[in-house]
Length: 129
Image 1 (cartoon, rainbow, N blue to C red):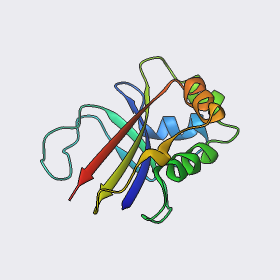
Image 2 (image 1 turned 180 degrees about the vertical axis):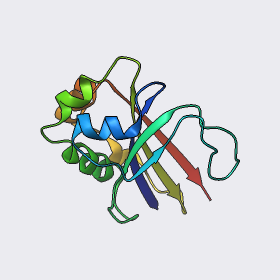
Image 3 (image 1 turned 45 degrees about the horizontal axis):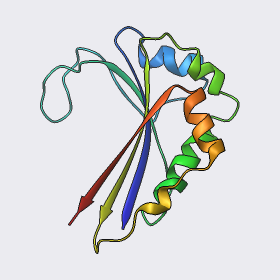
């Protein structure tokens, strides 16, 4: 199994540079509303601020999520206080090569509290190949 993790904050109004300033963490990647997308050339719908888990692809999905949450240590209130039009989302991917079990993704109560406090969504994509 290969796994990946990313945290994103989307905004129609707040540029990624301002999100970085307010949260206190530089983004690994940003998009600017209206600028052409990398692959399709269509305009970006939102400003986006993204950080990626640097953990190896052999780690479990939970480890990627916990790394991203730890990156926010002491900054959860800053994320939660972003304007309500900002959307915080954690994306986790798993490429399953042999039908491995992804149920190791079970979160502790503390993990879930952090997601609630951040007003964040979580998406899990599983690809079987």
